[in-house]
Length: 491
Image (cartoon, rainbow, N blue to C red; front, side):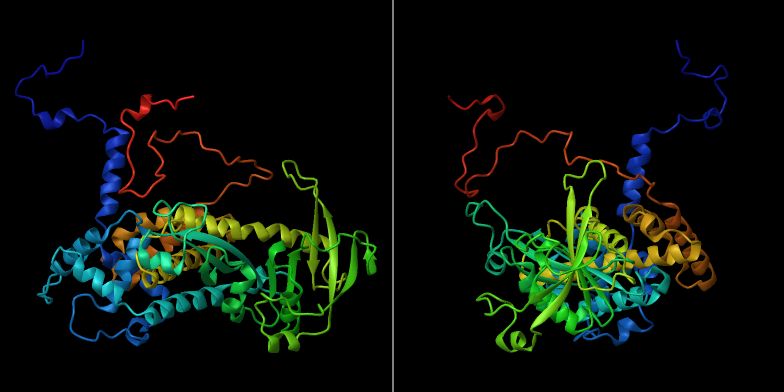
């Protein structure tokens, strides 16, 4: 039997020690600590990533009238919500109020209601948000060293995905839900075409449209992101003659998977060696009716295009595809070997990992804003947060000679959240702030993914979902089955 009292009744209880806290209590305290982070911590940490005096010279950065919610304050508050997906507007308003209470020179304190904050956030200029996104993207691309180029080229990867958002009338008008979903039961879905830098993982730009839009129909909105000397990497959906011919005329080469309608025959064209040949693709006689290129752009395209076809056998365990056909405008086999191009196309899967970091780790798969204008701002803020973390990863890899592709994005995000509470403390202490940032970069360099070649992770869930009914009718018409857990459908 355990003894609950001391042998000496007058012995101080403080010297008897205390029980070791449970893991649950430690975790609860850690989560509660993260919830009480303030906005100055975020601005003190990520503010130096922007150019000097950016928030004073950016477009529409000056408030139109005296207000608590200035564009800079709204930017950091919105970014804080993006980095903390569970943070509601009420929590952000409370953090702004707590921040202003600590500033004795500012007598104004916002009310705890969310209407003023939501109205001010809706009025936040898209030019200001886009300028912040462009500033982070430019700094990220400038810090990328030349050793991470592929054969002297900067490789950019292009692919499409989709995002969901709240079911409001405005969102439905802009991005209708798929027809397979019943009216009142589905959600608006937007198709997004994203462009990323393969070496650094930088989010370079994106385009939005309806869920039914093909990736090529969004190409004109992101075409300015490619420059002479770049290499564009993509899947078979982008392997179109018009796109490859236009980029070749601009000095941009392409590496795509061969489209399924193209004949897979190495006997066509001139042989370049084992499992590769050079083909001449002729310009189609007539412009397709739904072609994204107008008549003037179509007429400016060349009459023929040299395309190198490479057959790559797959011998890796777990791959369902036994052979991959690649179409590329890199026609020099002595400078770009078939093995190099095959390995480059194998890295195309990196964009799927980039989308996973954005949609799963940063919770952008389901957006929260209720109007199209705010949805576009929310996506741009996700791009700002993503590129800021990528910039910290890049600086960490350069400073500590770590493999850029091995540093975990989720681990870096977790380290960032743990480091936030001390950012504002060192804001006016440059030497301590520099030392603190060096420690942060060292911590980010240590969160690396283990090398697991040919690792197989099936897409399956072990934890079962709750036994709630599916909403098969609009909510105001839906009738819930009583005692549904014991309900069995009649035979």
